[in-house]
Image (cartoon, rainbow, N blue to C red):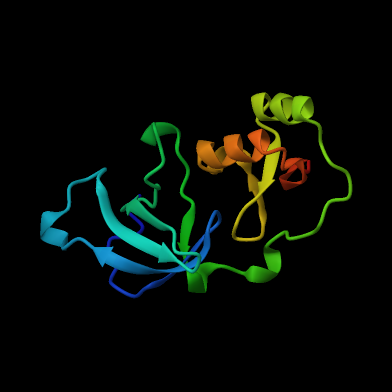
Length: 141
């Protein structure tokens, strides 16, 4: 599933983690090797991330268990993005339990609730360590 075969400089992208960004580097097709990073996106917040042709981000440890987190901007329906504010705050224990059960959502820097397992581990860990429990909620069924 090589979705980003025709990626080019300045393509507008949307990451469910970092929000809007533009392609700042795209490797020439003749130099690409399957499974390796072929393009880089710089997001509005300055963050830069490398991706494979399949859209798997550079923070993945295991590509077999890593989900695509990036889309072309024109593919995203922003009306479907869940940005509701939650009212109650989870405890650290509840966050750890939900993470273990794979039912934890986190408010991404992009402004929407997403599955916490799609977020870079360091972002989840830092939010918990900094007691930013308001950034987490239980996944809706």
